[in-house]
Amino acid sequence: MVPAVITVTRRLDHSPIGRGWEAIREDELAAASMGVPLIRMKLLAFAIGASFAGIMGVIFSAKQYFINPESFTFMESIGVLAMVILGGMGSIPGAILGASLVTVLNLQVLKGLSLWLNTLRNSGQILSIPFLGDFALSQLPAQLEPAKYERMVFGIIIVLMVIFRPQGIWPARRRLGKAGRA
Image 1 (cartoon, rainbow, N blue to C red):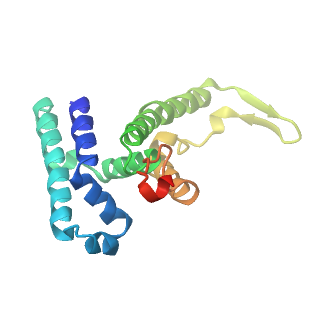
Image 2 (image 1 turned 45 degrees about the vertical axis):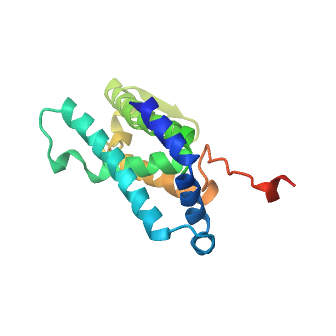
């Protein structure tokens, strides 16, 4: 299914519709003055995005036994936003990279770090720190579990990306017009 979505998205991106969307994204007033129908293009973008979401919803519901609104929490919205911002808006490879990184961070790194801290806590070992003395690892606070703080971690990722690299890790390539090649 992913190759089909990528193919459709690429075809749309290189069509007059995609060029109109890009013009609207860059400068709405200039796009309108060049004859791009703003309302029509925005409604088309909404409709195509909603159709992608609907198709994916059908596939998701076919794999589930029961679907209710609680299946889609605020954390899923934060995760999707982090995927797009981390990878790069307007970039298909960036979106795939962002989705992969956020999924690995969520499923592997945070949960693995929590398990490792629990293992240290239960080991009963004593850590000797020079000039500070001995510290029993069993005294690590139980609240110190990175998996519990995934909202905070994703929030920090989003804020850092917006400040230091707003275009994302893999930004979209901009088309060069005739004026850009000269």
